[in-house]
Amino acid sequence: MKTGKGWSTGEVESRIEDRGLRIEGRGSILYPLTSILIPFCALLTVAGCAGNSGHLEKKLMAEKPQLLRNQDYLVGFPDVLTIQVRGHAEMSGAAVIAPDGRIHLGQGSRLRVEGKSLSEVAAIVAGHAGLPTEAVTVKVKEYRSQPIFLIGQVVGWQRSVPYQGPETVLEVLQRVGGITPGAAVDDIYIVRAHVPDGPRPEVFHVDLKAILQKKDEKTNIRLLPYDQVYVGESSRAKLLKCLPPCLRPMFFPILGIRPIGPEGNGIRPKAQKPAHVNMYLPHKPSNLGAEK
Image 1 (tube, rainbow, N blue to C red):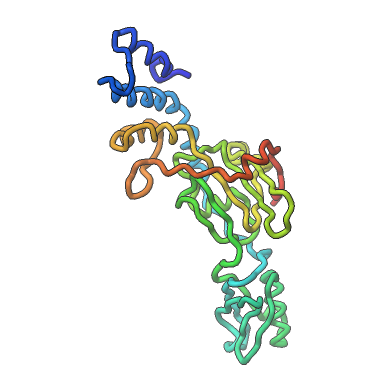
Image 2: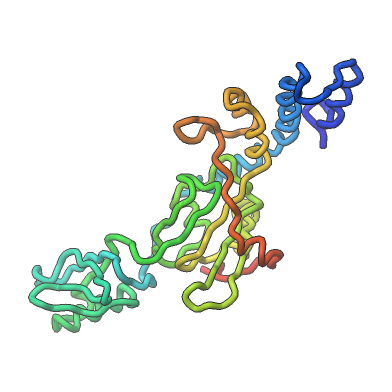
């Protein structure tokens, strides 16, 4: 692997030795210099790759996510619904789904809606009120019952976000703000643990380049509740950690990395890749849920 001036990191060390500046170990006066010089050369090596990664990062967020089509969302405890019943103000308003899966509509009315779609909830409320289904409107005010887990180099750092109905991995990444400048676009996986039903966990590789550049939807997985979205760390972000924090800002323009967080050091702690990713790889990319 060559540096910006055509030298590999090994050649840099040998040239130093040729000039009578042999490195004898950490006690050498030149050791601090070489500890900076070698990572510097390596950073120049990967600088050429930064443009493509940064381009994909911007392309990911170039288009606003489409309005969420959540009619297929199945509600559950403790989601909050907004219900409007025509001509019945006492039954309209916000309704929290209780642990028993029921909502309270006033005057002692408690209707079970756990596991129902919004259209089904509307039909249940309309039937209770003796009205046609068209007289009832039901929306989700707050998604609380089912999470999706984000791990690694995603904007906002790793966390859980609400599952809001059928969304592809691309739509979810757009919804949460995209990936960080230090993300590895070829190291993105979906881990489907199948915790409720117990089958063997599945791992799907996401080819973000193909999705964004070639409009290839084969690996644009449609997510399910409790899926884990793992975004790996790029080599340029890893190499940046080899430099002292005071020198890192000098390389932001070269590597295309923006400052992150209050410290502005451009990197984040490395996220541990989920065990399922390593355990069950290799796994052929799946087109599961790619059809829209």
